[in-house]
Length: 249
Ligand SMILES: *Cc1c(COP(=O)(O)O)cnc(C)c1O
Image (cartoon, rainbow, N blue to C red; front, side):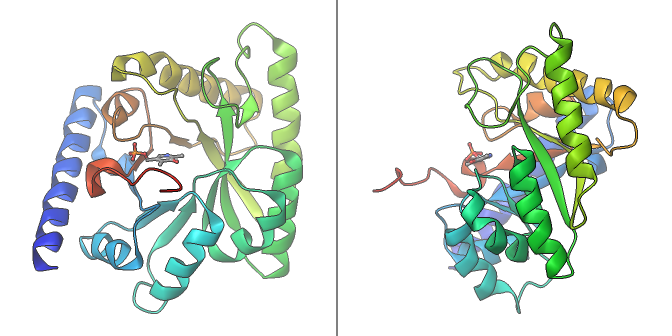
């Protein structure tokens, strides 16, 4: 247990150093990049361990799996900020609205409305990111913005959706999230990250009444490239906790 803890401390320190170096290359302040420790498949003790190293943000991709950990750690780790980063089914919107502080995977007006309604009823306001698909090969999840540069109607439809979501009580848009396609080389993800940032800059001009500050992009294999391209949140699992067991194993 003690050895596990010192290994985790070393890994967190190593990641923080790599974040700082990537910020330096990009001329950015490293306080502008938030490390989200992705703890899916790992138990509550592991989550407690990473929070004890000073990490404050935790990412989970399934409501049910996260629920047990959030409840187990609620008293001991009241300062933790829990992010839902995986696809959210409408029938889990209520649980998600009660459990998480941030939902990064909002991909429709209907889902946002369901989350907002439950959050509002509970007296909460959740930060949400709109998940977008800016690259052809990326996962099918997210608002479809593969052609936003060449197709003004696609961008306009997204802005209409964002305005509908921004009008909801119970949630507050803070930016965009994307998942880059799996690639052998981190450089292959660079155009995807660059596109997300360009989209954000365009949204700041075309829908300035909405907050577009956050860019959640970059994972274990490509987070340094994402930071060079403007990431404000990097979601890191394997580099902190090692390989995950195969799903359904
Ligand atoms: C699992 C997951 C991550 C973390 O991936 P690693 O490669 O382990 O760093 C990041 N984002 C999402 C959406 C994930 O599902």
